[in-house]
Image 1 (cartoon, each protein chain N blue to C red):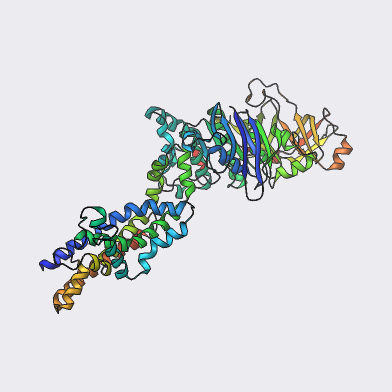
Image 2: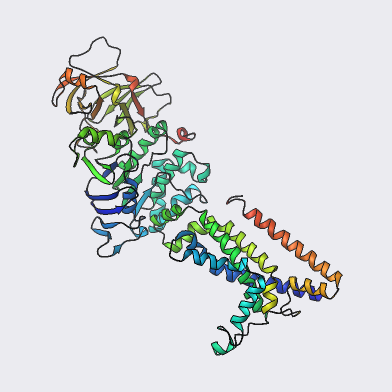
Length: 394
Length: 220
């Protein structure tokens, strides 16, 4: 996709000033609350008056205040999912899903409805009114409604923002699956490092109405790629907001039981994880996600032996941030033959590790250094793709 | 009894027509007042509510001056006879004017209660303004709008002061229920007045109950 933004919009406390050319398939706007991210999204969608500048998407101009061009929101073909879903309360799930279907032929609309309902597991909810749906179900329906309108761009405003951590983990694989199954470019706002890592090709760091960083998710989370600010650690602190720093990768489940679980990530890294209480069938094993909190990882210069932690892996330091966050590239134990190649080229995941300054100094951490990475299996949390039954109570 | 049934029929006819006309203006205007900010909004609001705070006879006198032969809407100004005064159409005009404030206030409150973001959402799904109104605003506001219509209808049914000023009190032509009760009482026809009172009570009570039910929530 190509989305060119050149915008100025006065907000309550500051002016939004953005100049961005976005080309990645999935881009996240990442930053603290009140940074102007939602306002920027509303300018793209066409719901915000008073913006000056230009918005162009794939060659068509949506806004050009100088030439007086303003394309109406109904003509932009954007699938918009706001934070609270905004389902139409008087329509049931199926009617909500079909609200945007009039832009396609009857056959196309029916196929789309079936495909979306299958991927997001919505069929069981078709007859229910929004007031009877749980928070997670509502967000899935809102996402489904946007997809059913056959959009050319998906705009998601903190799609999981209103949900608690457990529910977030359960819904993230859905978003991941939407990313894989529908070739629609996505622009999303997020507070959550895990969400950004699991979904995005590029992250744009945002603060008080301006772009402060831009780059690969791991880079921006580490404070690299910052623009106009010398201190990277400040950027990181700003960007992180309240969510805990964690790494989230797509993976497939190799083995799962109540006691233990083994997953293989892109690039062939095998991780022993916390056991899964539920029974995970073969159909749900391919699109799982694994999350590891940055403070739960230990780095060692020599190989620890007779240690209780189940994961002792080889890794190489990619970068060290002065704020005390290190990115380590995990080395595969097995050669990957068929991995997820959607991010990079099946590259091994970059694991974020939070360390104290003294630990960084003592270990002499610098890019390129090889070391051992120790992670308890209980610190690796797996979220399998969901089945409708699991989500009933969600 | 014939006069009672003709008064009842006239009342329904006048009040029904007045309600339709009022809704035709009050729905778009109420939507505008609820959704948009514009210069002079306060004044427009005050002007629209005016008939509620003025004595009905004052409103009637004002309408009479407008429609009188030499008035701005009279025969001499228009060049033809609009033939409104002392006909049932004058009754409609009086009822519409007097019920407008209560209808537009109810309509505005109804639209205030509908999240404008839902309408914005419908726009992003490819619906234009009118289609959005049909898909979201109208179904969500249906109860409120029905309540507004019923309140307007009842206000029109009870209208007396302005009606008597411009439509007169002509049995069989402009004499509504309210006027018939007055006439029956003045002429000492107590039995007839009591029957008319009973009819008015039943109609009024039914309408209030329906309005209450509709006002109780979108999905009762």
